[in-house]
Image (tube, rainbow, N blue to C red; front, side, top):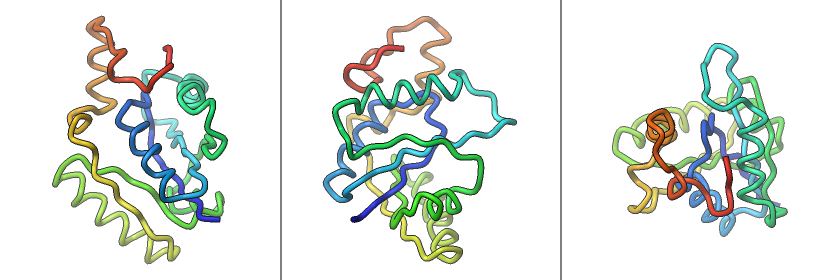
Length: 150
């Protein structure tokens, strides 16, 4: 069985994240979405709400699980018995950052990182953008996975 983790804060989980996981399911038997919990980081949505959003998005997909972690991502990958870390890249800046982290993670654990490039229609979407839209009272339905209600 090929298992990957897809780590992030997911505040909130967007249609871009959803697209990456859906595409990742063509490569992996199971994807564990790992919500990184950092007590010093201020989030808009609490952990339970972020779990709920992701579970709504994948309610009919048994190959997706949601867990939380408060450790290095590579340590979470080992504890989840993952063979791979799945990451998405929207830009050159993302690529440079992911390249550095992937090399560090492989050196520490031997776990490979698989990078999927974001589909162009989602390349501008980030959780930060969605939080800003929420702050200004805008409709964010198009930025969320299908069937997700906040």
